[in-house]
Image 1 (cartoon, rainbow over the protein chains, first blue to last red):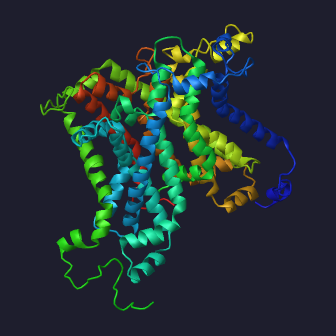
Image 2 (cartoon, one colour):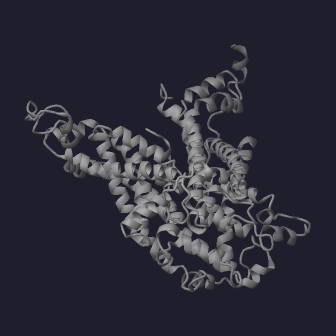
Image 3 (tube, chains in turn brown, yellow):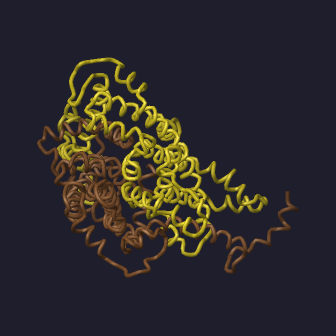
Length: 300
Length: 314
């Protein structure tokens, strides 16, 4: 088993500085793939900058050749019709803000405290509850939807922003608790023990020791929640009530409302506007976003 | 390091002279921690357990637009499995699900392998492959609806270039609409699979690669026969996450086709919502959602076996 390998051993130079044919093929494939992934973004942007006559000519991939217009963007934001009203996406944007900000803050805080309690203050059945929570994250939302409608109706918040906020907090719990639990478990236990010995209590250890050490995981959790909640459609449409529809619901109503001439440029401008917040979060946060989804998938 | 002698073992209450009875242990011990964890406990008990049991229970009633207690046994399920719309929805999900699962996993893995070749601009490429995952199903659906629009999208562009018989009308074609859904779904989901697979590839010991190279095993065989089996844990986790996501498929369909043309792209999640809020047949909706629940737990079994089985993998 020695003589075969000895021959071709030196033929594989490790540092591939130059371009051999194999590398060119690899780059070729990956660039083609990248173009497929970028195509929709490109189409969204170019379509939103074209006038309707240019769109009707029918080359969806051509860059805007005539005058570039931002009129579709203005219309999408201020006056596009959702089937009921013609106020554009602006109200939806603000509804989404009003839903996303409190939901993110509440769910992240509750989950952080729960994760901390699960790791450092184990109580009877704490592992059982955690396992249930983990399994619960796989239950289709449709299963729990109607009882949640009844609960929010009982609490007299159905059809308000608070109902959506409550629902997002509840259903964000599994992934966030998992995130925090795994992170807190990875911190050196001696720190916690030392603080205990010095007489610090539950909250004091949490606020003065745990939180300052876990800012990265807070960032990951916030990124995860902001994008997830902003992108939600189902809970918004069921729990928010017509006045409080988030941006995704209004976007769908604008684009898929059947009345009148279909203004594809306005539709695409509206689509980009709706995608803007998660895209911004994604491009700014970069590696943190990756960490977030990887942390969610790799169970501790 | 002052008063170590006094403060006992970890987690014991400060006033340790009380007798540690059962009730005391359950309710009083570390009371602050229990109060702090109570929202989580309440969510588990009320929502994840309570609401699920409630839904399963009421799927055996003849509830119309409001829940009531008239028990009808398996009637809702019998009706469900004889309903044409449910049959279409379930078959659609099965077809779409299998294709989507295989496609996203294979493409995601291949992309990860390509990304693992010490590329320049790796971060840039990863950003490009993953950004669709940051978008909502609604946005994804609407963009692809526009690109696949037969009169103004891809089809008309190619025809404009001179190939006049070119057809790409999947989105309005009853037989092909599921594949239109597949294009959009794959675009949305592969980046996620790629990131997980890449993490899996990177976690493999470099020594294994060296050993394989010394033995003269070609790279593709090393991937197929050595690396893939070693990544079993990551692969199962990814399969479970992607699989249970597919069962939930809802907003992508709403935005892309809204179930059309006709019923040809209906999915179970839409069936439930429709009977729950539009058609006012709660019992039927809950029966359908219970079947979805069963489907998810069937998908979960391999993961449960690995995670809670006799020995943890890795």
